[in-house]
Length: 226
Ligand code: MN
Picture 1 (cartoon, rainbow, N blue to C red):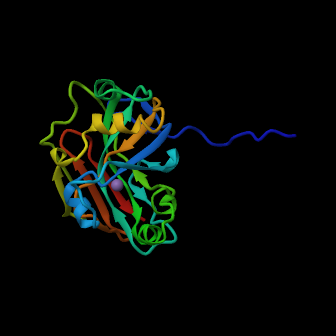
Picture 2 (cartoon, rainbow, N blue to C red):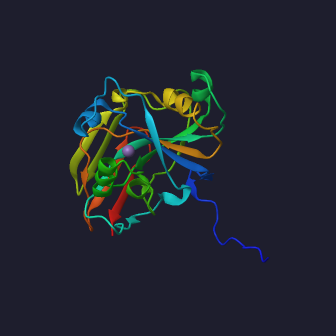
């Protein structure tokens, strides 16, 4: 038997100030802001966090993001991304908090039409969420102290028009709670990224549109859909 010699390399994200963060896996939280849960038809008062994932090489840095095939309804979801420096299983809140190495602004790009079809048929979300280049992400800020303040604004604009706006305080589950909860399902590892949910205002993107995604204190993420 001949061996397959891999031609791929570990995906990575640039760290602000120099260096790179090698990406092991990408997890995402569904419905972590009450106003977005409501706009998607959910009930924010009773739903525990749930998780889905993207392939590690879904991350994309740079100013051009391709419009994916097989959709006519590509949506933006601006999110705080947690970058883990350590891992573990069944982490306490304190251990979960200490596992967070840094933070970035990300956009959980979504084929909303495929997601709606998957929901209605009880099928997996993978092709709605985990397609190529579905995770544009800004540079990672290495954490100092407590991380982004709860009053930090999170927002996304298209061609200069604001579409999503909120604060991190609106998150139903805090970063430490998300990491702790996820660690009860899987053993988390250094290099794992967690997209932590989006505020209300998600909507469609078209080719040629310029997206600006921002969280106070983090490097701004800007890209154009090609
Ligand atoms: Mn999302």
